[in-house]
Image (tube, rainbow, N blue to C red; front, side, top):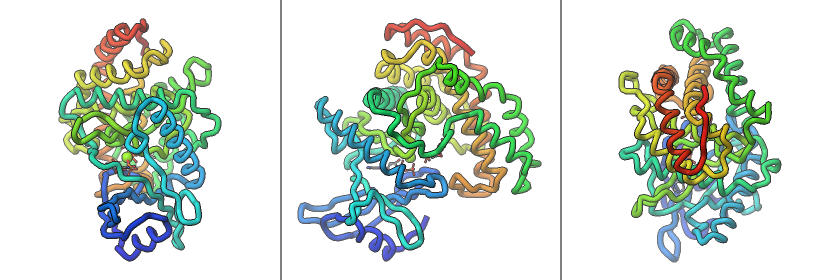
Length: 379
Ligand code: ADP
Ligand code: GN1
Ligand code: MG
């Protein structure tokens, strides 16, 4: 990502932000959007904002996406106000353009939005101690709780079938057959690993269709670095990256958090020998999440928590592999094998979770009992 100061000044001139533009710098390490921190000089001192270019290849309806984001953040603000929280730090605030739009579209068709920069916060790319991950679990559990009464039908589906793993599997199989980038020969073990697990991909969507799992408003991209922690108190403060907030399963949010945060290696660690599921981290997240959201979860949801971690990891590995096979058109990559490397870490993690499934189930049942829920493990 490289932008000229001239271009950034021009984009910012479309937003009604007090003061004079001083500087910008890239921030974050997401795979989809381009995120900049921009600084203004104002009469009251320095003021910072987040300026983000929405990836319109991935999010083809930025208008609908921004309607979701504004509506959800206003709803969260109201709840925070009513419950003694701080809306200015507990959720994002969208700054509209001078024309009253939720984002600015440039002549090149790029779409840019502005949020308040939440000062005095930090994000974690990996977990140093279980306590931080317990707080992460609480943050996503509370996020789900705060949106429990949100009218989910009014939300637009920003990416249709986003976590429909069976549909993701069909896309994957088509990518293998098409082999459009001529890379399938390099990924035979990984392709075989995913193909052997087709039946897993149907489990949650089938339960949803059968009415055995409730549709809720969920975040759907619960990576650790989508939580802002207070830099001083180290408490979790704000959930960000709201582009995929839409109706979904609680299991998607739980599972994706474990996939990213309970891995003993980075998502793109080339040495798969370093990849494993940390059971202490699994336990910590589960405690935080179930303490915050456990009361409202059904027995079936709790029973499938361990499986969801495996399924979300398999789904993500399958998505990285699909993108590799299609020539890296979706996720941002730093080198040609990047998506294959990411896929290998995910599949190594799936294998380790399969080996540890009974322990994950025992931990989950124990924590569930502590919050007053009895569950029969499954899968
Ligand atoms: P991406 O889609 O690229 O993951 P995010 O919305 O998650 O984009 O933002 C990337 C990073 O920028 C976050 O991980 C966080 O470190 C930082 N960030 C995002 N929004 C804010 C904010 N409002 N205040 C402070 N930091 C933020
Ligand atoms: C993407 O934007 P980011 O980096 O938070 C992706 C997630 C994947 C994740 C894998 C909209 O998230 O679904 O799980 O990469 N977001 C989208 O790291 O596809
Ligand atoms: Mg992010």
